Length: 293
Image (cartoon, rainbow, N blue to C red; front, top):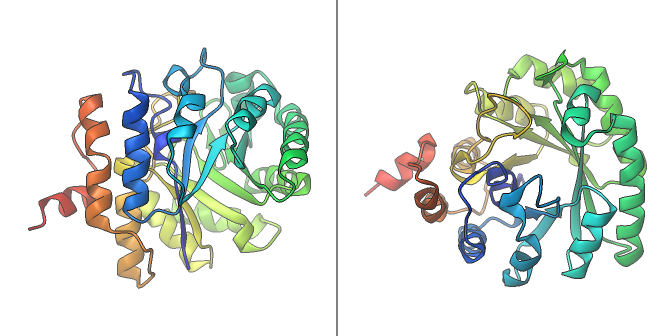
C-alpha cells in the first residue's frame, strides 16, 4: 500500500506571513484526518524567532484528537525538549545534501547537523525507545546556492542518517527542479530497502506528479504532499509549493492504488486556511473535486 505523509500543517504553513490562529490549525489537521490521511506532520519545534508561524507548536499539540500518526520537526536538543514536554512521540530531523544550504539555513555544515541529530535521536529514544524518527535530506537534486547535486552525494547523506538509526529518509526536491530521469539516477544510488525512503517533491516547475510516477515505477511507496499545494522553502528563493496532496491522491487512485483518502473531503479541508491566507485553490485535482456535482 502507498503511504502518504501529509506535511501541509508544517511545511505548508511555515513560510506563510499571515498569522493563523492555533485553533484554525487544529481544525485543519482534524479535517485532514477526517479525509482519511493517517500520517500528518503537524508542526515544528523550531525557534519562534526564525519561524513565527509555528511559534504555537506547544499550544497546538494538545489540541490534536487521537487517531492519525502525528509527527513534528525537531531541529535541535532545545526543540526536542519542548516537543517531549507535550508528548510528541514521532519526530523528524532535517539536513541537506549541500553544505551551502545547511549553512544558510541553520549555520552548520551537513556533517555538523548530523552530529546534532545524533544527540537529538539519542535523547528522543531515551524517552521513547520504540519511537519513530524520520530524517529529511533537502536539496536532494539541486541547491539554490551550490547548483546541481550529484546523486551519490545525496545518497551518502541518506546513508549517514540511516546509520544514525532513523526509520525513514525523506528525499526532498526543495526547489522543485527534478525530472524523472534524475529520480531514477538518485534511486540507483540509494543503499537500503525501498521502504526506508520517501520522496518529497515540490511542484515549482510542474514536474512533481511525473516524478512520483517515476518513483512508483521503481517500486517506492512513500510520498510527502501538502494539501492544496501549500508551502515552499523559506531559504530557497523562488521555490514553489509542495506537491498538492489532492494531485497525488488522484494520481494514485487512477493508478489503481488505494489511498483510503476521500478526495472530496480532502479538497475541502484546506479551504478555511486558504481563506485566512487570502488565497484561492490552485491544485488541479482540488479544483476539479470542488467543482464536481
